[in-house]
Image (cartoon, rainbow, N blue to C red):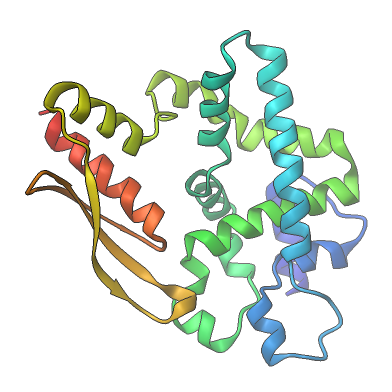
Length: 229
C-alpha cells in the first residue's frame, strides 16, 4: 500500500509531509466498521474541510477573473464543484483503487460510486490544505478543476438541466414538467433510482442516478435532447 501512496503522490505532484494525513483521505467509514481498532479515522472530517476550501478557492478565482453577474458566476461555480465533476477527476487519479472499504462496500461497487469518490476528492483537497497550505491547494485546484471552466462556459454545461427544461416547457407549452420515480433498487448505501420526466401525460425522458436528484437531472437532460430535435 505504501508504494501505491508514493505513486499517487507522484501522480498529483505533491509529496505529503504527513503521510498519515494522506492515508486518511482513502479511509471510508465502512472500513472502520470492520476494523474498529484501526489507528486512523475515516475521511469525513477531511471531506468537510475540503468542501469549504474548494468553494473558497473557486469563488476567489471567479471573483478576481470575471465581472459577470453574481447569478451567472454562482452557476459556473456549481458546475465546477458538483459531484459529477469531482468524480470525473477522482477517476482520472484512480482514487477508487486506493479506497479502504468494507468487504460489502467493495463488493457492491464502492470503488466506482460517484458520491464516494467525489467525497474522497474533497477529502484530498482538505488534506493538501492541512499539509501544504492554501497556495499548493490553490495550485492543485487551478490545474485539475478550474482548467475545465472554459469548456463549461463555452458548452453551456453550467446550465441546470431541470431549470432549462422547465423554462422551455412553461414558455412554449404552458406546462410544468413533473418527475416520477419509476424504479428503485439496491440496499440503502448503494441505492439506484430510475426517474421519468413527464410533460402532461407524455413520458419525455428517463434518467438513472444514485440519488433522486441526480436521476432527475439525467432525466431532464434526456428530455432536452428529445425536446430540441
